[in-house]
Image 1 (tube, one colour):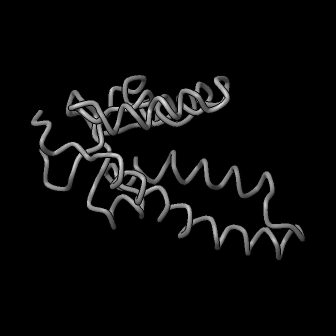
Image 2 (cartoon, rainbow, N blue to C red; image 1 turned 45 degrees about the vertical axis):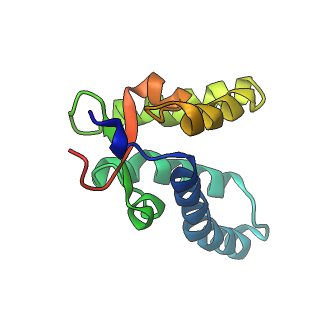
Length: 135
């Protein structure tokens, strides 16, 4: 796989910000209406399900990734499935949480400095984030 097409830190960060705004704001409003507060278990569950399921049904994209022209791919070329995304989101997220965010900071440096632009959760799941059109 040509590393020229691997998405770097700023593009991935921008996609994450866009996803947070596009999904987070409506969820906070819905949560506020339903529960009387903007940050609830409901918003966390729906956000997690969004990041877990949308790339599966939308060929590696989330809304933010689509806008930024990047997508998640498996290294072996197979389609992204629930197992891949559970490893990427759940196991990766647990590692980031258990290390109190230190692994997240390490991942950010990995994406910024490594030639293949892969973070810890990419290694766990066997994925890479690439620019559109990279096959």
